[in-house]
Every structure is written in structure tokens, then in C-alpha cells.
Amino acid sequence: MSGETPRGDTSAAAEEPDERDLLQRAAAAGIHRLAIPTPFQVGRVNAYLIEDTPLTLIDSGPNSGKALDELEQALRVHGHGIEDIELLIVSHQHIDHIGLASIVARRSGAEVAALDLLAPYLSRFREQADLDDQFAQEIMLRHGIPGEVVTALRAVSASFRAWGAAVDVSRPLADGETIALANRTLRVLHRPGHSPSDTVFLDESRGILLAADHLIKHISSNPLLARPLGAAEEPPAQRPRALLDYIASLKLTREMELSLVLSGHGEPISDHVALIDERFRMHRRRAERIHGLIASQPRSAHEIAIELWGNVAVTQAFLTLSEVLGHVDLLLEEGRVAEREGAGGDEVVRFEAV
Ligand SMILES: [Zn+2]
Image 1 (cartoon, rainbow, N blue to C red):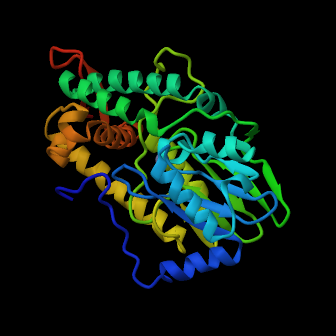
Image 2 (image 1 turned 135 degrees about the vertical axis):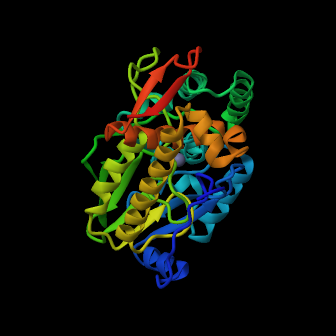
């Protein structure tokens, strides 16, 4: 476990069908993966073209000329242009998924569909992203990340802002409703955890789940600390519990009968139950490791992150803080740790074993 970074969890998948077979299976169902470049560590983001009526695109890539160019090329391979898109579906609020949405919508006149709770966020993206940064800043300081690191990270986040863009949602989606296409229905399912707005789309007759970042084969989907959707400008009274939400969402997905899961990054998944079970085991191991650190002495979340990941806990302070607090939330829920404010003579929260 030592030196393992939050993004470093690989899945053991020995005898599964290979990527090409699975993509062909999706293509036979009229669903094509378009892998669009991003400037982020995660690498390419997957948009999906559904050849049906309306012609549908799920996600679109970040707001950049390079991403737009590659999106156009990828659509052309299938005989379409951006102007042909009739329905654009947004899976969740992260900029690598939403950045091009407004350009695609403007050039095509497509309807833009997203979870109803997400619509106000998308239409006021810049203001909402600023509130996200403010929220992140407060929570980082509260959990022991030094002020200069917090300031630096806020600047990094602001510099990423232009990769996102606001988009107006013309078709708000309710959790559980269906979107009818000529040759399929897509069931809309809210699965918060990785972000508060994660929405997955089930092609019901084929058992194909378009899962975006809810489930990714080669990395565990970081349950990032985030402001609850629709929250007022004041910070929420209680810390959002992203990992607990995420585990509850994964349990729902685990119960589904699926032939294929198409993710927001990387390869398709043919055995979602095995992958989800592996994620559950990983979260359990990480929670126990963190419990061991807290049992040896009271620590702040940032101190725990440094023990686990060294300098990565500084360069990726928010990501690693999200990981630690998520697992601490599991331990709090089990009554095995307690949260103490100001025990170190400062405002920083420390955790101790019960
Ligand atoms: Zn995401």
C-alpha cells in the first residue's frame, strides 16, 4: 500500500474480453466511443455517440480547440458532423465532460439534457466554480493543509477554469425517468459520489450502462469533496460525505444486470460486479490503514495524507484530502474514530481513535 496514490489502483482483469471486442459490441448497439484529449492527468475523456433518433452525444470533452478538432474528426469517422447532433446529454459537472457542451449546442441546435439538480450549476458555471473553490479552500484549511499550499492550489484551479464553460440545459432530467429514442430507451439514474451530479444512463433492452466517471476500470473514481448541489452560498452545516454516498451508489449499480459498462475514461467493463467488489475491498483496506495511523496518535487529515502519499499529498492536496476524509467518514460512521476541533491549539480538526 505504501506509495500507492489515490489514482494508482489498478484492477486485475485477466481473462476478460479485450477492449476491441467490447467496443465492437457497443458499436453493434449503435454506441461509439469517441476518446477526446484533455490537458488533465486523467488523459482522454470518453464521449459517446449514439446513432439513433435523435442523434445523441453523451458528454463532449473540455473546452479547447484541440478537443473540438478531435471531436469533429471522431464524428466524421461515423459520417456525422457536430451540426447533426440532436440531443446532447451531460453526465456530470466536471470540466473534462462539459467544456464543449455550449459550442456543440450552439452549432447543432441540439437539446441539452442533464440532471435537473445540475441545470442551475451548468448555466452559471463560472460563479458556481468560484463557490466550489471557496468551499475547497475552507475545507483544506480546516483539515490542516498549509495556507500557502491552499493559495497555490486555488490559483491552479482558477487557471483550469477556461477548460469548462456554462451551458443552458433545455431538458432537465429527473432521477428515474426515461429518455425515448427511436430504437432504445435510456433510463436516467442519479448515482452521486464521484461528484454530486453523477448520472448514469441505462440502455434498458441491451443492459448497456453509460456510466461516465461513476465506474472506471483502471482507476478508482475519486469521491471528491464537493459542495452539495443546490446549496446556498453559505458552507453546508455538515461536511459532505462523498465516499459514503459513492459506496451507496455503487451498491445500487452492483445489483443491476448489465452486459457492458461504458466509462468516462478508459476501457469498457464487462464484469461490473467483480470490479465493484474490488473497489469495496480497496476502500476497506485503505480505511483500516488510516485507522491504524489514527490509533497510533491523533492526526489531521492532511497529516494522514502525508503519511500515506508523501509529497503527492502536497501537490495533489485536495485530491488526497478527499481520499482521507472519505475513509475517515467510514470510520466515523462505524464509531471507531472521533473528530476533535482545536485540540492542537489551532483551528485544525484532528481525528483520534475511540
Ligand atoms: Zn468526473
